[in-house]
Structure formats: structure tokens, C-alpha cells
Image (cartoon, rainbow, N blue to C red; front, side, top):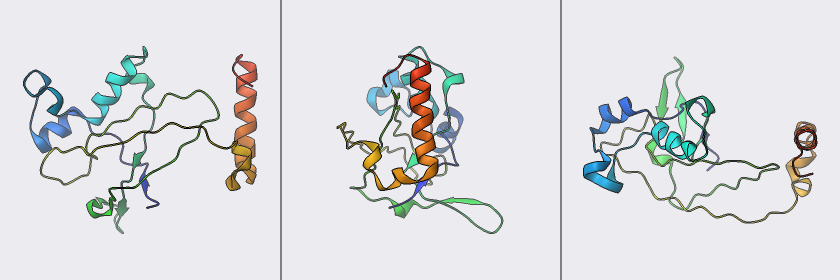
Length: 154
């Protein structure tokens, strides 16, 4: 695949209501129309976090292209049903997922797709081919330094 959108951000309640209408939890239960931002805020709230803790997100498996004028276009046909991504973390990390539609998705109906999440141990990052790049070595060193200064795992 090779495409992950880091530009377009999350959908908000206004955008979801404009595109798909309203389906509130009280009437629709698990078929509620929830924006990406609202989904993220609900999950962050479980950890005592809120709007100020929302950071830039990645829209995995979302291809967005720009034309000569800079207009962004969501490429709907780019998705693959069995696509996967592996993430590795050098420090404790909170990962929050939302299956809300991409902000630029032109689908006429609100239809989040399924996701499967697997967690497993991986080989040490120092064995990865990309780990030999100078910027990655610096990043790992900075992470270890951060942990040492803050009493985390070493």
C-alpha cells in the first residue's frame, strides 16, 4: 500500500452531520454516527485526557493526492481489505483508534469498516534495517535518555 494520510486530520461532529445526517446513540446504539474527533476524545477521557491532548493523527490506508492548485482528493479505490501496518514503540505509548470516515471521503453513507488489532512482541529495534540510519539512532538515544531522566524503563 504505502499510503497513510498525515495531512487531513480527523472528522468533527459538524462535518459528519453535514455529510451523513445525525444518528444519536440513544436511538441507534452502536450504529451511532460518531466523528473521528469525538471517538478520540471519548477514549482519551478514559485516561483523564482531553482536547488539549489530541495530537496530529495518521489516517492509515488513506491515499490523498494534491493537484497543481493544491486541492486535496481522497482516493476511495485505494483501500485493500487485508492491508496491515506494524507499529513499534520504544516507550510506553497510548494508541487511540477511530474508524470514523476520512474527512474527505465521498461515500454517501456512514459506514466505518472493521479493524483487527494484534499486539505481539517484536525483535529489538536495533535489528531493523532502518535502525542504522543516523536520525533513528538519535531518536532511540533520545528516548532512552528521556526514560532515564524520568524514571522509566531503561
